[in-house]
Amino acid sequence: MTTNLDEPSTIQVDSNDVRRTDYSKYLDSTLSADGSLAHEVVTRVSAGWLKWRSMIGVFCDKNTPDRFKSKVYQTIVRSVALYGAECWPATKEVERRLSVMETKMLR
Image (cartoon, rainbow, N blue to C red; front, side, top):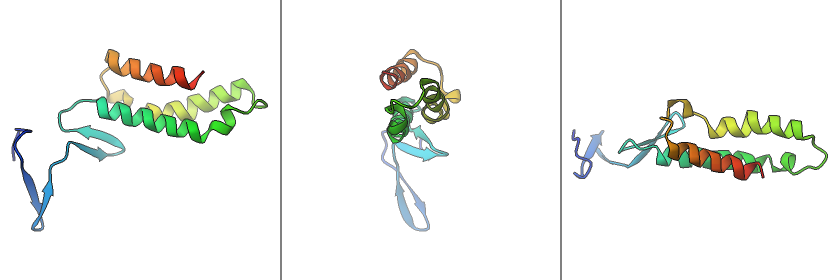
């Protein structure tokens, strides 16, 4: 075991070498080797956009009431984008990225 991230190392499982990775998924959250949130925030914003695009028929329909569109956005799209965010430190960068996503979606 090592704490030096620059040192190349592998772990053996059943005589097979498993290489070190910079990112790993666990419970739909992206864990970074250096502990940063940048990759996780990008992943969650991308997931929010995917959900928004899947609901584009609702958002662009002129016959759908704005109140319903707002409820769909708040309950589905925002929930997907903010999944796990309660564990993130509230930095200005994270807030800015989420604010930019929301502003672009609500145009």
